[in-house]
Each structure stands twice: as C-alpha cells, then as structure tokens.
Amino acid sequence: MAFEQGEGSMQRNPVGKLGETGLYMLQDMGRMGLYLLLALKGLFRRPFRFAEFMRQMHFIGAGSMVVIFCTAASTGMVLGLQGYYSLHKFGAEGMLGSAVSLTLIMELGPVLTAIMVAGRAGSAMCAELGIMRISEQIDALECMAVDPFRYLISPKFLAALVSIPLLTALFDVVGIAGGYVAGVHLMGVNPGSYLEGMRTSVTNHDINLGVIKSFVFALLVVWICTGRGYFIYQIRGAGFGAQSVSRVTTQAVVFSSISVLIFDYLLTAVLL
Amino acid sequence: MSEFAIEFRDVTKSFAKKDGGRQMILDHVNFSIPVGKTTVIAGGSGQGKSVTLKLILGLMPVDSGQILVGGEDVTGLRGRSLEQLRTHFGVLFQGSALFDSLSVYENVALPLRERTSKSDGEIREQVMAILTQLELTGHEEKFPAQLSGGMRKRVGLARALQLKPEIMLFDEPTTGLDPVMTQDIYRLFARTQEQVGYTAVIVSHDIPKVFNLADQVIVLNNGKTDVFASPEALQWSREPHIREFVESTMGEIYQSHLVEQ
Figure 1 (tube, chains in turn green, orange):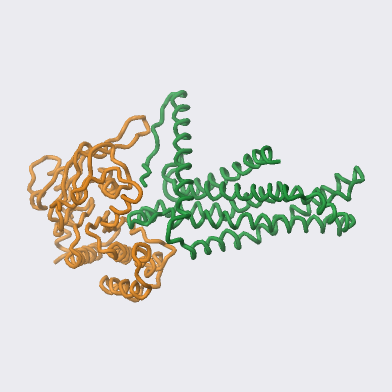
Figure 2 (figure 1 turned 180 degrees about the vertical axis):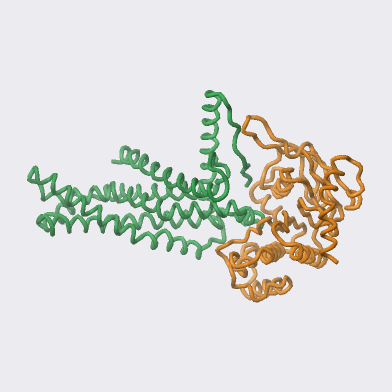
C-alpha cells in the first residue's frame, strides 16, 4: 500500500496552524487506524511466520522477565509496607493480603507491566521498524511483493498479545509474594490472615478485569510502538535520519504509556 | 503485448511545501521505456528521479495521469493486484536495502522463500548459483554490515534477480563507489541483462558512468522530461538546459574513459 511521504503545509497564522494541526491529527489517526486493521489482517495471511513469532515471544516475553520480576517484587513489597501502615491505623492488618492482591491484579499488574514492556521492548520495536523504513528495507519487501504486515508487523502483534498477559500474571504472582514478605516477615502480619484475605476477596470478575486490561494494553503498546516506527516519515517534526529514529522512539514510549493510563481509567470505569 | 515495458501518460506528481504551496516534481510527463532495452533516467538532485521509480512501483500515488506496465494501466492499484504487479520487477536500491539482521545467504534466499514453494535444497542450489555468478562465494555467512559498498550492491543485485524479473529498476546503483568498482558493477549489469533479458531502468545523476550502457536517455529537469533515443543524441542536443547538463558532466565523461582504458 502507498503512504505518501512529506509533511503537510505549515500555515503561518495561528488559526491556520490550529487547522493544520487538527488535519494532521485526523490524518494520523486515520493512518494508525488503517495500520491496525492491516496488522490484524496480516495475522490471518499465510504462510504464518512461526519462527519469527517465537523470536518475538523470546524478545518481548522472556527478555522482559527480569525487568518485570524486579518491578513486581519492589512494587509488592512497597504495597505491603504502605498497606500495613494504613491498615494498622484502623486495626485492620488482616486485610493486607486482600488490599495487596486486589491492587495488583486489577490495577498495578496490567498497568506497570504494559509500561515496562513499552519502555523495554516497545522502544526497540519502534526503532527497528524506523531504521528499516529509512534504510528502504520495508520498501524492498514491498517491491519483492512481500506483505510487510504479514512478514514484519503481525508476528510482533501476536507475540505481544500472548506475552504481555503472561508477564502480567507473573507480575501479579511476584508482587503478591513481595507483599507477603514485607507484610508477614517484616511487619509481623499473620500469614494465615494474609492468604485467607486474598482468597476470600479476589473474585473471578477481578481476575477477568485484569486479564482484559492486559490484552487491551498489549494491543495499545504494540500498535503505537510499531506504528510510529512504520510511519517515521509521516510524523510531524520527527526530522530525518538517526535523529528521527530517536525522536519517534521517545514519542512512541510516551504515547503508549499515556494511552495505557487513559485506557486504564476508561476500562475501570466501564468494567468495574 | 506492448512494445513498451513502461509508459508514463501525462503524469503529474507534487509535494506539499512548508509555505503552503506545492512543489511540482513531475509536470504532465510523457515517456515510454522500450522492452529489453536500457533506459537511463538522468537529472540533477531533487529532480524526481527516485520519485519516478517509486511511482512505477506503486510506492507513491500519482496526482494525475496514467502509468502503464506491459500495456496495462496500473495507476492506483492496491492490495493483491499491486503485489502481483511487483512480481514483474526487480529493484536495486540506492543503499542496497539489505536486511541487516539476515546473512548474505538469507537475504538472497528471501524472495525464493516468500514467493515460491521451492524446497530448501532447491533454494540453496539457486542461491549458490547466483552468488557464484556475482563473485560472492565465501561471503554467504557474512552480514551486510561486514561487506564493502560494492559487495552490498552485488548482494542487492543477486536478491533482485532471484525471481527472474522482466524489468529491473536501479536507483543510483553506483553512488558512493569508486570508479573501478563502478565499472565492475556496470559490467555485471550488462552481463546479467544479457543472461536474464530484462528491461533495465537506471536512475542516475551521473550520466558519464552509464553512457555506454544506455539505449535511451530521459532527462528530468524542473518537472519536465526530454527523451533522447541514444546517449549521442543527448550529447549533441542544442537545447540550452541540456547543453548545460551535458557540459557539466563532460569532465566526468573524459575521466570515465580514462578509467576504462
């Protein structure tokens, strides 16, 4: 498919500039919407690149495990300490397990996992595609009549949609264990009440909410990060060459992180 | 079957400028590229040479006009039809556009893996044959970053020739190469064209270096084209802007002949 290169015209007066910005945003949204459709369509085009999918699973999933483990452990332990401090004021330390697990499963697990993956793997995917675009590698694929969505983008989408929910589950488990260590071993909360509080308060609905969030955030991260790299020439103010790659990569991480936070609120408001 | 591989009919292409206007790249351009011949598209920087190639390949849309490939109108093709059109082409990009995470072997094998149902054995046989032909044996496990500019061009050529294209497009094929390497690359073009029989379209700002190869020369200048049936016709043209273009390259023609000698 053809995407025209070049920036739009810069109007000099403020109203013109505003209009031009509005038009650019509309164009950008249209481009990104079309991109999402083509990437999802690419998942069903044959032959499916299983080896590339596994490589991306390894990169996004296995490669992010250490980062997720460290973030989850520290978040869980901080939650354990903060939760104990707050609950102790009301003599409700027994609710610590419930507070830590619900916070992690419904909120912090999906959000922090998505943001960490955006920073680690999303930035790399964006830079990779940006460099492939400016060095004409994507044009070369198109000229060989190879669909770049099936070949390059869709395996990344599928790998993100599988690995980010799994990383979220890892985050939840490690975080809850961190909360247990801080609450039970350091602050002296009864281990039985920590586990029982968690067991009785966490419902299937809470887990489903966390799972839905993790899928939506995975889609947002992979869509925005790969899309910004793919459209590196069309992004206003990105510049050219190596500088454009660095700017667009930063933009991709910022946009995807903000989108995760906005969608977190929307999903919580709709599904809770 | 049309006698022309590619035809431009009244094609216009422009880009938006920062001041709100449009920069005209091709202004109602008409030309035809005959089958089996070598056509050089020449012109200074920013005259739309690479844009012309991108329009042919459907990587950019035209503003107006028609582009015909093999007599069929391909303007505005999308999706599978566009993919089908591209199977007729081989492209050697200015920077070679090799996949930097793949080895030389994997780069050259990619079109065969993606576009044919050949077995691994058949692919290996075909890849090794073309690597031998282009003097690249012993380099198949190297990555593009480990190759010289000339070798990268040869790998790009090997990859482009894998599916036996009817039309080969060369975008500034010798940019950044020394004169000896340039002659070497053009010798390879001539040899592979003789073997495969493709129509060659060479985009170059560097007319002297492709002087001996060209059957037809198209000069792009301020959105307009001048078509010359031979390089000699270009050389003896009395049009002032063509004279200026030719004279600016005469020194290089002389140097190019010295290298050949």
